[in-house]
Length: 244
Image (cartoon, rainbow, N blue to C red):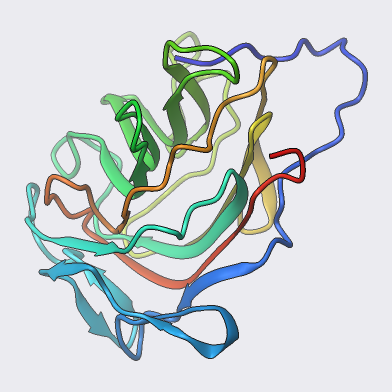
């Protein structure tokens, strides 16, 4: 599912992701559902069903069982080809199949041209392989066929020889918050947890991220399935690359 990754012996790569790009929207998650936009503007939700504001953050099915239904989305314009999202997430599940047996989305938007998805999600591959992943299903620049571009790290220790055993690992537990930052540009995906870089993927040729201008979904999927987490201190940043 990965795109072309630059070899380890390639010349040092200069990151292009824009963690200091313009603030497009922020949401504390403890006072309301409106995003604070540029210049003090407000961005109300496009849809909300089942997500509650609490003193600990947005309750996206945190206390609910598997298959919790609900949806929270915001209008288009919050995703740019260079940008980042930072948020604190508290899982309402453990990393075992009795508690979480399917992948769940934390953030996503879609391409308005080819229908592919840019998503940050908990990837459940098997009972031994859980990961936090970012995945962009899109074409490369000047190409037509969409393909996968990913970066991920394990959130459960995987046995040697299993799918996630070579990934950097963080041990997630129910009720323990983690601050996640995902940064992107056409040539790079970076994932950090609590200020530590956990995964990096570099791509050549570069990804075409210009068509991801659909609505943004937080704390669950566009199909109406909640992630069963608490979310707070969300910041979305972005800009259009100077070359576009």
